[in-house]
Amino acid sequence: MLFRSCRSNLSATMPSITEDLVARGMDPGEVKDRLGWAVSLGTIGYALGKFAARSLTDLLGGRRNYLIGMAGAVACTMLIALSGSLPVFTLIWYTNRLIQSLGWPGMIKITSRWFSYSTYGTVMGVISLSFLFGDAAARAFMGKLIDAGLGWREVFWVAGGALAVLLVLNVALIRESPKDLGLPEPETNPDNLYGALGADPHPWIRSWNCSPGEARRPITARPCRRQSTRSRLLTWPSGRERLTGSSWQRSCTTSGTCSTARTRISPIAASTADMRKRAGPGWRATSA
Image 1 (cartoon, rainbow, N blue to C red):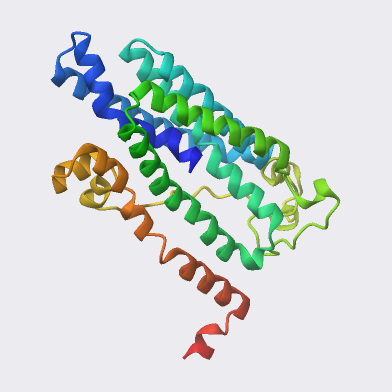
Image 2 (image 1 turned 30 degrees about the vertical axis):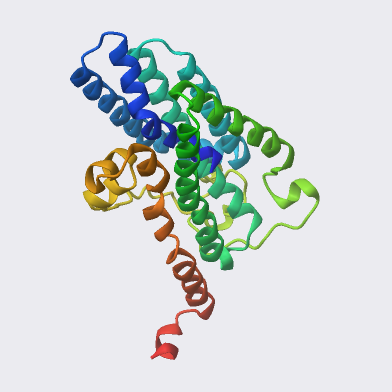
């Protein structure tokens, strides 16, 4: 939730930021357009960061990438609260989203080192709930802060401070793999992309220096995701306010409802995938 609060804080405080900039003499229409550019550039930065994050995660390890992403989010969130101009605000927000892109790949890497491949589906189904519930909880949290009378800068300070506390706990508690605690490593999928190097902490690096039969070359896949415009609007306070006619504070508090609803199917689908995997190639014939 706290990681998401350093991302959802912009959508939650958009009216307050707009009022602040208009009070300084900017045209309301110009403010709306330039904040829209800030949001768009942040999304682009997050997407671009994923291309580097995949290699950095194998190079530096999941723990380092996850903590770097979290530390970067804390620093950028607090710098935004100190910023005095919209161009600086936009640049820092872009950097915030760019560095946050390290978080999810890092968490996936850590998960792969702590759990056997036969339970990947179930484990990732549960971890994915943190993404969905976290978004809903973060928006509700922001709504409560706004209801309490906090301005947008104060909301950013609270979000950054709360994540900073979580960062300290993660630095103390998170380990890259069971090996760091003297525990046995979980089983690696023998059919993994890197072949015999699948259990190596840095398989992507090692795969380019091994014999042709030792590992398979990585293949870059481009994920495809489709989501209706209305569904996306309902998860943003501004879109929910426009579609439902509710107040901004209520829209901010309840905009996480759609994210919460999406959590219902994730564990079921993930557990089903693990059961099919353990059943092997004959699961279709058995189920028929």
